[in-house]
Each structure stands twice: as C-alpha cells, then as structure tokens.
Amino acid sequence: MERFGQGLDSKVLVLNKLYMAIRVVSARRAFVMLAKDLAEVIHVDEGKYQNFNFSSWLEVAQFQKEFERERHDWVKTVRFDIAVPRIIRLFGYERLPAQSVKLNRRNLFARDRNQCQYCGKHFPTADLSIDHVLPRAQGGGESWENLVCACLWCNAKKGGRTPEQANMKLVRPVKRPKRNPLITLRLGSEKYQSWKTFLDEAYWSVELR
Image (cartoon, rainbow, N blue to C red; front, side, top):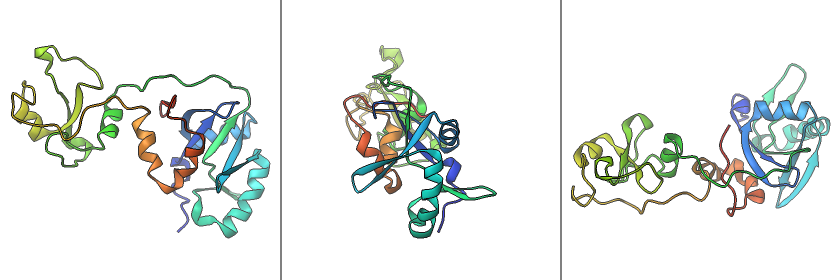
C-alpha cells in the first residue's frame, strides 16, 4: 500500500556539507530546502549513495513510483507524486551537532521505551510519570542518571523513598543515552535504515525539530 498520507509526517536526516549528521527535520521542511536549492538528496542503495538535485529527484521519483513504490513515502501534488527522501545534505553548512542529548520528558519516555522501570510493563504516555530514583527530598537532582519512567501505581507505591527503602528494583541500570533516544527508536524501523550510513555514535546527539 502506498503511504501517500504519511508523506509530510516522515522524518528526513540532514547532513552538513561534510556529510555529517546534524539534525532531523520534517519532510515538509526538507522539501523547502530542496526547492530553494539549499540542499541535495542523498539516496542510499545497498550501502552506496547517490546525489540528486531537486529536479533530478523528481525525475527519479517517476521510476521509483513504477518499480519501488512500496519502499517510499509519497507526497501527492497536482502535477506529480514525489518520493520523500530519507537524507538530504546542506550545501553551505559545516558545523557539527551539539555533544549532549537534551533532558526532557519526551526523550526520557523514548529512552525507557514507555516502560515502567519498576514493574517492567509498557504504558501509554498518559499513564506514565517521571520518578526521581533518589527523591528530591533526599537530595536527588534532575539528571539522566536519576530520572526514570514509572507507571502511576509504582510511583505512588515508591512515594518519597529510594527503591531500596521501598523494597523495589529497577528493571535496568539508569544511564545517560549516547544519542537522541528518538533516533534510536527510528533506526528500528526498516524505512530509516539508510540513516545508519551517516550516523557516528561518537558524536550523534541531534534534537528532533
């Protein structure tokens, strides 16, 4: 089934001029940069990549629609259908990404994969809370190593105690992620496998925008 409805919701990996990953943007924003000739498409196939400008990508899309349409998300326009590129490269940007992952609720939920770190069950975001492993009342701070997802029941059971004091155990050690947890989740999807060609765990930590 063609994914026309998902086209503009797809995510596109952005490389700088030196082919280093710097951020992830929406397909809508990626197409704007391509149309303004600020970037080019990088298409990865069997470990090798090709460069396309916007007009040549439109031409390739006609072949893709006929022979590879299941492999792509699509944006439908009045004149033609465009395959959403997975990767684009900016022509005039050489800076590297920041070296840290932003600490926020979205990234915490992604790191813990919506799993309560005490009972081990998975929950919708609305049924999860953020728990301080070492409670604030006992000097616990806001850090990757002290914050975990907890279901409402486990959070209430633990209260203002440490896991040891509450006779509870964490399902896994609490760690700072090496890169943006949401990117790690996307790499589990087949349609974003081409990103791996340009991701270096030594510095990858971009924010989703």
